[in-house]
Image 1 (tube, rainbow, N blue to C red):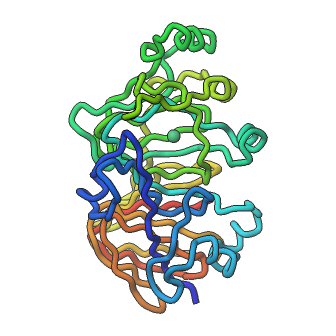
Image 2 (cartoon, protein in one colour):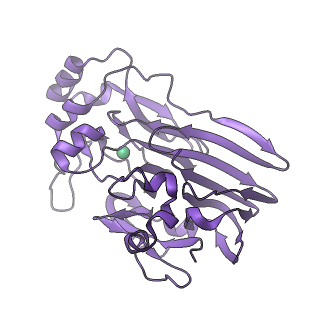
Image 3 (cartoon, protein in one colour):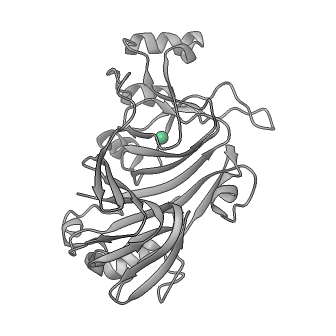
Length: 324
Ligand code: ZN
């Protein structure tokens, strides 16, 4: 009988990483340059292990191989994705990330044997003057962009956006982007690890080496449509008694809700699709028909489709993700 599976995170070091994963969530990160915590991952570059119950120590892939339809749900199962479709991370950008773009599905399949990557960010914390890069300044064409790369003036064509805690961004594949310094985000994305780096701020590591750029592939996939002014997701906020549910994003790859729970919230699963939960504030328990499991901020769970109704007993803020 499946139950809510708490996932053990996988940590990734990065030159731009920091210590917030430990400071904010008490995570046992390996160094003071930890950039990413892969919270729910089923990818060759990172595989979550179950942290609780009978299945403790099994990988998410093993669980899905054994329980297939029962875990994923009848609707998701019959789509035959070939691999688990989502990847969830918490990212600590102590320094800014490279300016980058991710390919669309078709391009990624041909050139990388990977999925494309459409992603979204929920800002968990940001320093007072934090900024990120979302798309290009209005009117910048492919030609303008190529000239800016050649002339070393790329920073002038990027669209900078002010960021504060609670902001939400949707980043379709093909959108140039970079998380700025002093930003902690939760990221929900397609299960892909393909990034084309366009510009790395002329940074070098301790040995004087700069990171590889992928300009040609980036130019193949960048969308030059104008996104300026449409950066932040507003969502649709619904009051549910003392709780609120904000429907943030619903796209072909994932749907995401942000729940602010002061009492408890009933979530219904009818066997068709799984849920992913990322707790970002508070603590409490997850109650389901055969038991309960406690949670705290920074914990992430795979909720099997077969579990039926379950309750999140707060107070807590939680990001709930599923595939429509
Ligand atoms: Zn990205």
